[in-house]
Amino acid sequence: MTIPVHHESRSRLQSLRLAWIGVLVIVAVSAPPVLARRGQASNPCAPRKRVLEAARAAAGVEYRQDPAPLISKEGNTCVVTVWRIPKVPGGFRTVTVGAEGKVLRVDRGK
Image 1 (cartoon, one colour):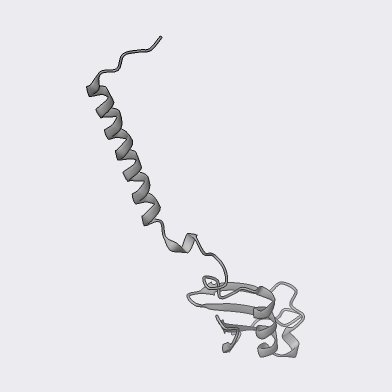
Image 2: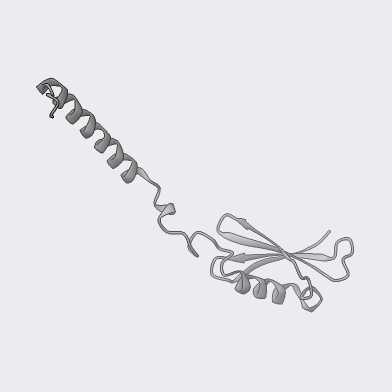
């Protein structure tokens, strides 16, 4: 058994279908491109091992024993805080590493 559908109902369904297709196209086109490509370009702290090696080498021999250096991302740079062991007030270095892995700055703790 078929249910009769009026011509007017069909055109409404077709209009709704076209409207939804339009909404989906707009959402797909307007999605930010950053979501599509995540990786080293968006994270200057990757790979972590390379950044830590550069920071520890720049800070000095006394700072290479810190088991858990603090790493944070600031813009297009990576900031690493390494402590001298045993920890003492002011016994740290803050090393800024660029996206290419080059050390840009080394600051002493205060």
